[in-house]
Amino acid sequence: MTLFKNDDTLEIIYKLFQAYSYFFHQNKTEITSTVTSDTNKVPSCAAVSTALSGKLDTGVIASGINTDNRNDDTSVPSVKAVAAYVDSNISGAMDFAVVKEDTTLSVSNDTNGLCAVRVTKMSDGSVQYQSSSVVFGSLSNQKTAFTFNIEASANYMIEAWTYNSGTQKLVPAAVKFI
Image (cartoon, rainbow, N blue to C red):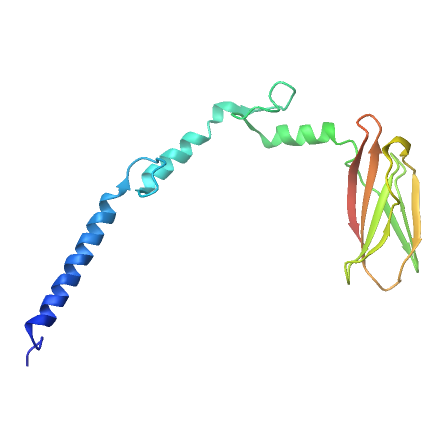
């Protein structure tokens, strides 16, 4: 029994093998040992590893964020620096109280007060209550801020904001789910 019926079949297989060899050789020679901006070359694993390790210089990790380095494009802030910056600049990062009684919901904050509240019904995403339009010149925080009617069996998401009069900005207080 003959493996190939004629020489044409053998010729086709040989041509396919040549094409495969050429393709493999071409791709192998396009693998570079460095990372460049070439769009037709593939970097090796070693090149990618070297390039990535050079991008994060642990010698330029900022331990604090201040007015000198807050816009610095070359320094990477540490987690501790970011946490300290957030704690010192977001005065409204606080908790607030939500009391649900039958068909009434009360939202308050005894420490700093609240300025705005939005209540969203979780079952359909509809806003059930939202503070009226905000005019920054007349905003004020209230310790017992808001009381309104709800469906007793429904679940709600309550978002609250306090007003920072120094920066004249609404600052998110927190989000609660009931």
